[in-house]
Amino acid sequence: MKIQDEKDVDKLVKALKNGAPTAFDELFSIYGNRLYGFVFGYLKMKEEAEEIVQEVFLTVWRTRKNLKPELSFKAYLFKIAYHQILEHFERTTKQQEYKHHIIDEAVDFTNDVDERLNYQMLLDKVETVINQLPPRQKEILIKKKKEGLSLKEIARQLKISPKTVENHLSEALKNIKKELGIENISAILLFILN
Image (tube, rainbow, N blue to C red):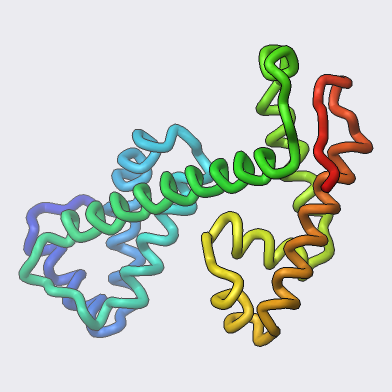
């Protein structure tokens, strides 16, 4: 649809506010590609950019009753997209941080080892090992290391005792150390098996 002026968009926004799916479809066809270009410009990743565009429009649909047709719909869309991009970067950073933290707990490096280590390979291996943990151990490990929750917060969320949380976390770290030890990545790692 070719927009002649902002009045056309305002009408569509008003229709969307009243729950018209066709207005939603038309607004998506108008702004979808532009929004994708904007997001892709930041992320440089096709799938992630598509997911964020979908999430932006899902947010618009879920909050359609709160739309303000008198305000710029385009600015509203791009503001949501920008916040989604920031959240994406924050999540990515946290994911890397929690893997680094687990490696710090599981691996002891000598200076010689440190120089020769392919760190990214180790990060990938840690992620594989985490994905192979029993579901409860994996869930608790992620809540603790990735989301930064305390043992008490995890216990409250999962409706189990803090001691049980601590036991699962301890077992998860033992399993990670054991798996990394078995793999003995290129014989260049020294492992602490507490």
